[in-house]
Length: 163
Image 1 (cartoon, helix red, strand yellow):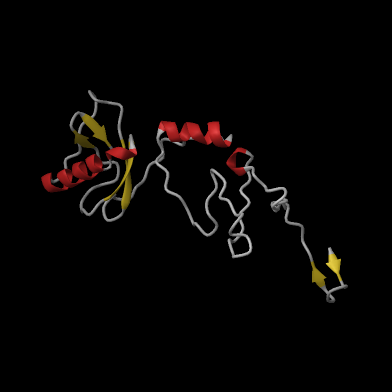
Image 2 (cartoon, one colour; image 1 turned 45 degrees about the horizontal axis):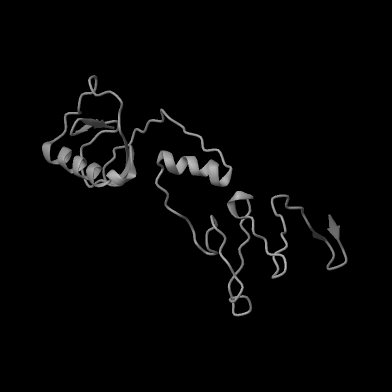
């Protein structure tokens, strides 16, 4: 849409992703993740007495949130937020897991798996890091300081194999 009312040659474009919500003291927007909307506004002195953070919403200015991807957490995406979560499997990397955060997944092959031939100290570093990240579940993100480990290497931790 072109408008010459404010200044000649100014154009306006509809942004369909934007939705305005009524968020007043009399009628607060209280949908949160169950309704799929999280209205957030700054909290200056004018509204600090009535400003509320909705359950399931991030505070204004918060850049992100770390979530452990456990089965229970994934189920909550749907039961609380009504959102589907899709799993993508079978993706492979060609980069070494050394010198950065790498993802290790528990393998379901106790009798058929064979641990990769790694230097003892390197294998022990990886095993220790995987054990320390036990609270992350079957898929663990660990920061490895190592060298000479190829992508797709397999490590045995107790009777469990991870790659």
